[in-house]
Amino acid sequence: MGRYYHAVENEEDWEGTRKLLFQDDWLTKEVDKTASAMRFYRPTTLEQVAVYMGACEAFYEGLCYKALSEKMRNIKLKDEDENTELILTTAEQQLIAWLDMMLAMDYLELANSYEGRPVTNDEGVVELARFYEHCAIASLTVVDEIEVKRVGSRYGLQQDSARAELMYRDVDYAAARLAATEVLPNLHNYFGTGPQYNYARLSATTMLHTWSAMLIAKYYSLGIETDEYYNIIGVRSEKTLTDWLEDSRGQANRAIGSLIDNGIDATTCLQLYSVARTSEGRGEEDRLDALEGYFNVNVTAQVLRRLAGVKGVGN
Image (cartoon, rainbow, N blue to C red):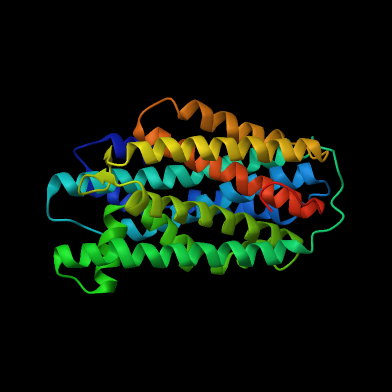
């Protein structure tokens, strides 16, 4: 990897750097190693399930960014500055994918230290995954109706070309679209068809559900202002964002309380909550990250309650 990063930093050899983006055997090896470890890990307690799902989310995100880098590295722009930025962005996506693999392995190691409440009923895993996938696909359809059409109208493009243009300009949309159309349908290649695959699919669909919900928030609900590459520069509906954060924070608190009241370890949700709470006091982009964090808390808590056979807040 040393030569890889050296080339990225060498501004006089961008074409050489582009060629190195295609030499990603090092990343493929990390993906395969991580997949092997995850395929043979079987969580037996609810606490292990929560951490294992965290590993699955990291692995899934890594696959999405790897797929995204494979798409982006084939683009070559005429504008030199934009082309340089694209090369750096693609290299960053490969790095994020690699870091996600490291995070997934850390989660697996952490899961081994958890005991807790045995999983006695995981029959709802497949049903939950199907539910969250339908929610995510519905949200992405709304995004296509809102933003893809807007891009098509602005640049005079048909839907497929407009979608490709939006994927080029907005990494968040690109990752979610690839997650739904290319990564999710191929998860079985990494997990087989056993219980681990069911947990991995559930984790993937809950993450995709959150990603797609945040896209609707960005494009429609909150009036987010962006530059031409969808970097956030302002929020028109500031009060809506504040109210939404407050409501989501309160819901997350109640969800965590419901876990504790029912004897379910809430450590994972508390960690997610703490990160979101810290981000909430920063800039606009961080506040959106906080909102996504609260979404994650609520979805994770809902999944744990369902697996524990508990009905309560959020069900």
